[in-house]
Length: 389
Image 1 (spheres, rainbow, N blue to C red):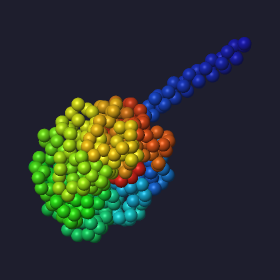
Image 2: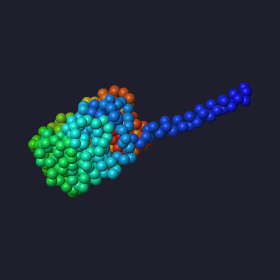
Image 3: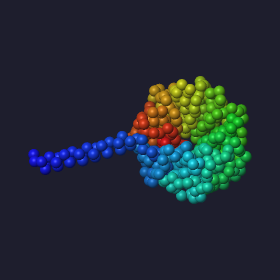
Image 4: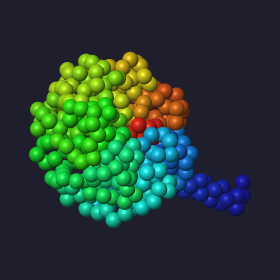
């Protein structure tokens, strides 16, 4: 080999080495990219990636950095009404997806497949998304926008609003949650207030009468956390027990029955609860020891216990520990563990499990690997879309 050819070979080797050196960090860093991730059904643009195509693996939400998001809530189902709202670190709120009832809060009813600001909202400390309505806590008061057919905006009427309106007669609110067509607020004094649709007793007021202004739930005085399913509510009390009310055909109230309850009942065989999570028609609790309990509808394996048998009282989810957040939609569940891995299980027709398939899974599969950077998850209220941030 001549000197010139040796020089040429050395140059090619150096170039290959340089290329490989620069390529490796990009591959290794891919799970740690800075963006909020979304996957699953996308008919309304609820994945925020600029399209309306379903996504079977996690993809970035356009321009929304994980570090800038304090809270994200998915709403709607898997059709064109599905949407999401995100509370940013600066106290503003962005929204994207379906907008059939003005649930994006931008003054229009036009769908948008990428995030943009909710009109005139700042200083927000919590957000929630319902079926076609959204909520924000600002200065201890609640703002709402979107569909109002059942009084779920809490402004004393039933007229929908494409921009935020104030929920009446409610202050010192620390958190808000939303079901399909009702809303729940937790006040600083530990009381719980509800409004909106009540056809399954989901307001916890002892009847099935809709309310267009907030009413206090009797008998709940020391709540520290609230969570909602589509038509049921969970409240964790200071003593580590859980109360539940509303729709119960699938056992999602956990009181060893399938009887709808218009007033709070205690979830059976459950204490030492650290966190609660309401999903479409099923429920979860994370205990003080880090283990997880599940109950409610399980027809698609969304309880994660390896079966498709619904449960009327909490059962352990095998092999699931170090969970720091959970969420669920109509028939699936997502969870993030302390190592940054995101797991999912249940129904997968739209790719909402994020494992590059559309095959249901009655036990957890991996959507994002350890080290992904995710610490929170969300899912559309009654739908087939998932989020990690």
